[in-house]
Length: 218
Length: 247
Length: 54
Image 1 (cartoon, rainbow over the protein chains, first blue to last red):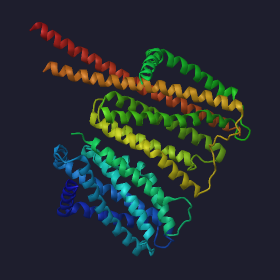
Image 2 (cartoon, each protein chain N blue to C red):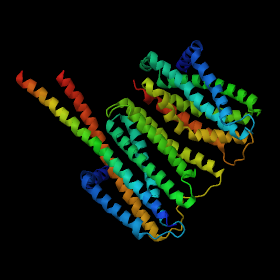
Image 3 (cartoon, rainbow over the protein chains, first blue to last red):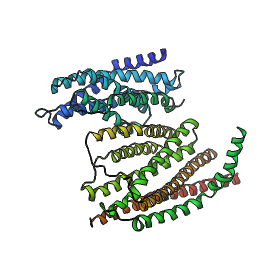
Image 4 (cartoon, one colour):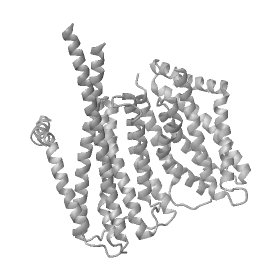
C-alpha cells in the first residue's frame, strides 16, 4: 500500500513538473472534438445520436496517448528497469501507475464532458452517463496500463500500442456508447449495457493485476 | 491415486506415444483422405440447396473454419499461458504456429462469408454479429503475430508480450460476442449464416466430413509450423553456442 | 441463380489459394532453416580446423 502511494506520488509529481505531457493530451482531446464537429457537420444537424460515439472515441484515443506517456518516459530515462529491479512489488507499481493514469484520464474526461455539454447543447452531466464513464474507465485504464508496460523500441511504440489495444477494447466501446445512448435517452435498448461495462471492467482489472508481474520479469 | 497414475502411464505408452511417433505418417494420410472426401462431398455428393443454389456449398468451408479457428486460438491461449508459467520456448512455438493457422482460418471465414453473401443478399458485408466478431478476432490475433514478430525466434521478451496479448485476446472472446450480438439486435438484420436445424441428413454428413477434414488439416499445419518454429529456436541457440566457442 | 456458380468457385478458390500461400510461407521458413544450418556447418568446420592446426 505504502509503495503504491510512493509510485503514485512520483508519477503525479513528474506529470506536474513536466506539464507538456498531460497538457498535450488535454489539448489533443479538445482538438478531437472539433475534428468530429467539422467531419460530421454537427453545427446544423441534430448531433445527439452521434454524441455518445464521439465521447467514447475521444476517451479511447486520448486515454491511450495519456497512459502511454508514463511508461514511455520511464523507458527513455531507464527508470523502468530500476523500478523493476528494486524490491517494490510489481503489483504496487501497477497500482501506482493505474491510479495516476486514472486521475489523469478523469481530468481529461471531465473537460471533454463540459466541452461537449457547452458545444452540443446536450446535458452530458447526467449521473448515468458519469457512472458508465467511470465503470468503463476502470477497465480501460487497467488494460491499457498493462499493455503500455511492454518495452518497445521508440519507432514501433506509437503505432503498435493502439493496434494491440483497440481490438481488445471494442466490447468496452460498444457498451459505453450504448449505455450512454440509453442514459441520454437517445436510444431504447433492453440489453444490460451498464452491467456489461461493470463485468468488462472487473475482468480487465483482475486480468491486468494478474498479468502485470509477468510483463517485465526481474 | 496410484491406479490413476498407472492408467495414465499405460495410456501414454500404448496410445499417445505411438500416435505421436507416427504423426508424420498418420496425419498427412488421414488429412488427404478426408480432404478428398470433403471435396467430393461438398461439390458433388451434397444436394443443391433449393433457395440459395450452389453458393450454399461454401457452407462446408465457412462453418467448419469458423468453429476450428476458435480451437486454434484456444491452443494459442493455452500454450501462451503455459509459456508464461514455465518459460519454455517450445510452448511459444506452438502458440505462434496455432495463431498463424487460426488467422488463416479466420480469413477463410470472412472471405467465404463475403462471397456467399454477395449473390444472396447483393452485398459483401452485412455487419452480421458472427462475422463482425470474427473480424475483431482476426484483428486481435494479427496484433499477436505483429508483437511476436518484433523479436526473432529466441526472443523471450517478444514471446512474453505476445503471450499476454494472446491470452487476453482469447479471454475477451465471450465479451466480444455478447457486445456485438446485443449491438446487432438494435438493428434487425438478415440472419444469414445460421445452420438451420432443418438441414437434410446428406448435408449434415458432408458437413461432418468437412469438419473432420479441416480439423485434421489444421492439426497438421500447426504441427508443421510449430516444428519449424522450434527448429528455428534450436538453430538460433546453436549459433549462439558456436559464437561462444569461436570467441 | 446461375451466376452463383462463379461465386462458389471463387469461394473454393480462396480456400485453396490461402492454403497454398500458407504452405509457400512454411516452405520459405524451412529453406531459411536449411541455409542457416549450412552456415553453422561452415563455422563449425572453421573452428575444428583451427583447433586441429593449433
